[in-house]
Length: 300
Image 1 (cartoon, rainbow, N blue to C red):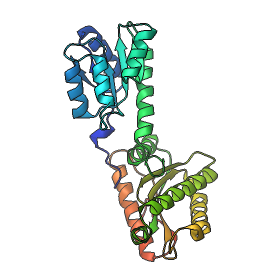
Image 2: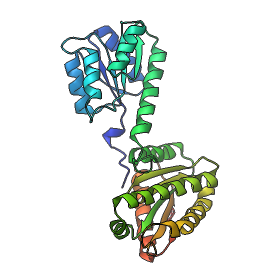
Image 3: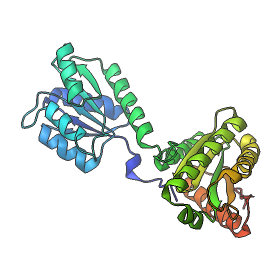
Image 4: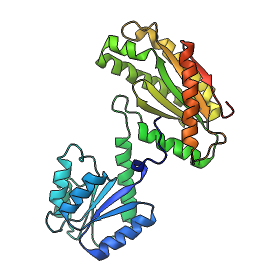
């Protein structure tokens, strides 16, 4: 299952690298009140260790710090393939264009000089985290939202309490087919499938549906129940219409869709139950051995 409700990676963590206790306390209070988990570093060396230990959503980085200064911290992180995507907000008393350019060239993604407005600071932190998460949460093959983004979309649907349909889409006999055509062509096929599903979701919903890519040939759609039947018809039609364009022998392939909804589910344990329903529905769909879908609602 792609969703783990208690997964700690869903927490928004921020490392605050600041040697001034008063400023660190002020920043911690502002971000803590906004729901972030704040981790304090008093020097650059400690900041590097905290980032590597906790993989935070954001690093708030002072420039003038003991042991390792902020510019060097930024350079080391951006040069490391594991931590180069960690967004950095440089917060410093060194004002002026020259200092800002130096900070940005060292690797900062945004720059604020002290003194600063806490509202602007909080808004910039949230904007950097949103942008970073959008980038991190995309599947590299299809550029569609990935597993973490799917988790958050389903969590949001459960929180809202609005009736929501969730569709798990997969390709029957995919593994043997992918082995026969090779990695490059199988990735092209998955990329095309993602594009067909996204187009179908847009047509069905007018642009309001969510399509995510778990990996391989597995996709998730989250949309209004009113749009579900139209989306399923669009997806099946697109797959059958493009089958002749697929590489190799695609005769044994079939598009299978498992459908459930959030009726009666809450945030507490609802995602796990939803996953169980989809799992049962997908098993039935694949057992049928042909293109088609299985409805498995809250009463199933």
